[in-house]
Length: 308
Image (tube, rainbow, N blue to C red; front, side, top):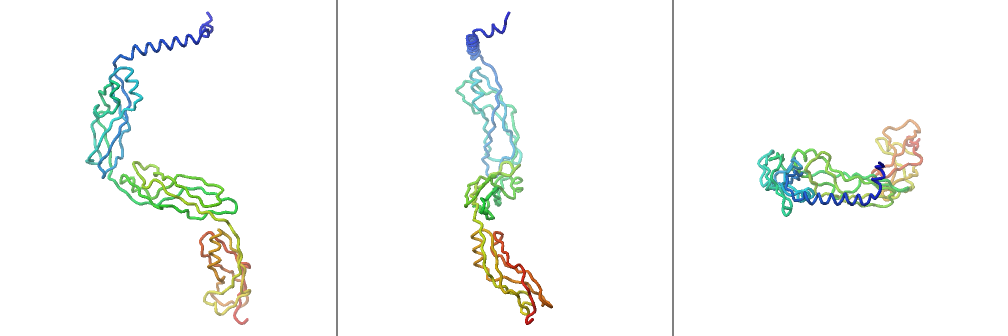
């Protein structure tokens, strides 16, 4: 006999017949009563504000009795056991579980008869909190001709971490979620959520996010002419030649302008009178941090004894 041909011929009719048989079987068995074990979520409501829940099972198993169709509906209904803890009596508490604590759709006609295990162990810690700094985790790439100014601006720059004593004590800082920003040509602001440090359980962060501003400025090159003055213990007994130099200032536009506004001369350090002409490096004091560089031209001038 050609079984492939038998299965292939009129396959739509055969499939429909199989489906009808399945529905008939389901209808016949749906009214039968039996027991079914259903995974049940465990919800712990700690009402004692001096303690935090550190460890508890996520779920237990509840045995239900009822008709097949009700039990099938119950499996998808997410039953749960709710336990309210009004007062924590110590770091470890054992709490009894009872079928009456199971929350489910009681209109289904199923009945909870047993919860396994019959009790659970809960672990608590005293509530603690501390203020810690926020570290923005941003990857910033400026566009050509621009620079990102540091540090980034964070508001607020510190937050409160709250949770069990052992968890909070180990936290020294919290970071934002990592964000990559590219081709930056102007300042950017982002409201970034904060991450609970890895391994910290039951810890809350207040506020849960911070506002991070990425300052961006254009890169410029400016040149100015500055007089050169000797400095040091022998400064009054020497003279320099030339007595002025060009200074090329490079960096972020705003910082370069502040540098040009604040600097009035360059210096050479002289702590002993040289016996003859001596080349000495020219120094320009930077007043704007790491966003500016200043290069004197020439980089050295001649220092000679006064009157020579």
